[in-house]
Length: 325
Image 1 (cartoon, one colour):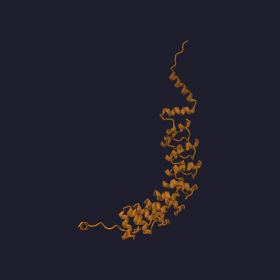
Image 2: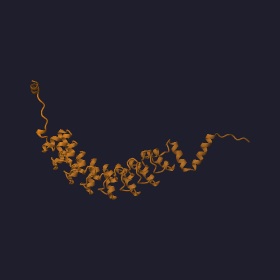
Image 3: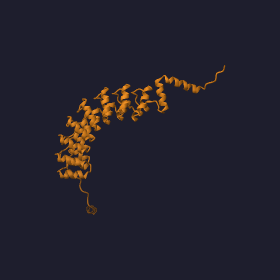
Image 4: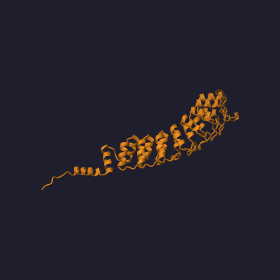
């Protein structure tokens, strides 16, 4: 009796297929292969970003860890939070994703990413699953409330405060959520924080500047108006003795300069180096701001050079001729 030969390659494929049928992980990997999807961490995180729930589930069924980071250090749950992929975030958490894992680049947790990007549903989900409300980024020490304020995310701010977030918490440079809102000109976020008790007087560590100083420095006139209306000190000086008026003048924000003067800013206040707002305007070569300040009675704080110390004028052509004679 003779047996016909069975080609080796087709037989191998058949055996692998039969084996995969009884192995869920291999079945999932075969499906990914049929879809031309590479089975690796980079591809996994990228599919999360794209919101491809089916493929993400196949990755997990194939044995991919729900905490497997890509080459850049982005975590699966962090990417889902950043991209607003709520369904995928639920899938990852159900498969054991760690809610407080930090990414490599910023040291930010999924909650921090969801907060700054404005995804309140994901924020709620993460908090329910044990996300740390006070977790901070590894580089600047910002927490979720601060990043929400920096992003102007009022819904998230309300949610975090209701969950017990500290309204006047500070980062590594002593900057508060209010300061972050002021820095980026998020008036609604700042208004909400002020209504909830944000402190106007806190100064940052590096420059000793207040929220009003930050808003004036960046030309955020609506924020300047709001902060002044809420009782901010118009002449609050930073560590160098520079006032909000000086900051606005230096950065050519004429509308802010006009508003501060209207609200009682001391036009001739001097910084520790003796300079006034007028000196800052002149240093920035802004004639419009200089004119506004002069109309308000501004003077220079720089000491005038005594006549005896001034260099003698150069001799005229006639004087030179006379000397030759």
